[in-house]
Image (cartoon, rainbow, N blue to C red; front, top):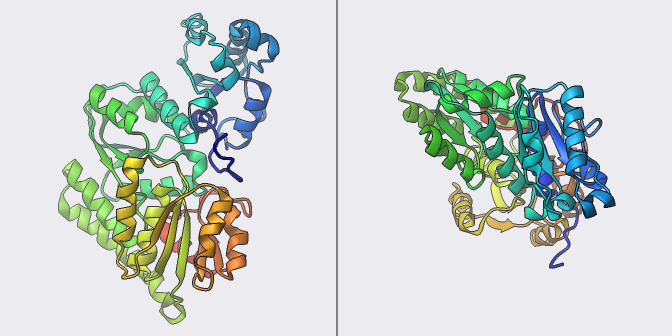
Length: 421
């Protein structure tokens, strides 16, 4: 083993795929895996329909199935799931043991072609990659299984590029980005936060534009939509956080969709007036912090821009925890180092908690604010810095529909930064 990661926040590809399927309303993941894989993968995923790992269908393959094949056991599991689990879309996800023995899952699924509900298989054996690999595979497989094109809707967009369980404020963030787009007459398919998730996937082939929130994830999905439905993709360097980002976001989307600039500017002005009325109240209580930020690139980029370009804080280090490909790392590094501050942030790509602590120690005596996951809370205390939780995992409190993006969300973010605990 090349390296053992201390307290990893990213798991195997089975987890990433389960994160996608399990967070689509009335989608049923069926695991073809050992009991241990099934439990561990689902235990780390907030499943929308099933309410956690309880009741998750699985073939629970043991030694017999690994040695002699588990297709019979899988067939029984699929049959029982279709009879008992009330869903609209079913996906068989393969674990490591059954991926190794080479079960012909497609032949098993073909026996259920008369089912009134879509049924697909995704080879998500954990050795194929991490959470992000599974996310890419499952999202693409679901789009292939469900998306159809009838007539292009000039005001419909698809939004993706963020694994659901990897963002502690995902539900609130998607609600906020949906609200912002509605200000210019645009409807968003977000796939994961609403009860019409299945229908959103079906309608996604009619979208006029894709919005990929990540500078590196889901490129395979971008390509599929382009080749099969002619839908172009607008790739963002992270979520839009705060009034400046929101204005750029609205103008960019509006231009891509050919929306009247007057409509765009009216929405921009309304959003700016709303947020600055709140931020102005901080002038008498403003604290300028030297900060360290830990998190996934899509969220960290947006947070860093807001903290520096709008709020005037000083960046010391940004530590990115997702599996960013080498060719995209320089793009992300350049984005962070182009922030409006003469002190250029140091940029690291690291997921190991021990190594993150070693990096943070370099800034002891200088860092006054530390933002990250619950894993980083003790590190902040050792540095004597204030702490705010902004990334996954969050083990200290429950978050329902709170947001950290857009204009409404950045107000909640500022509250978290100033209400130190």
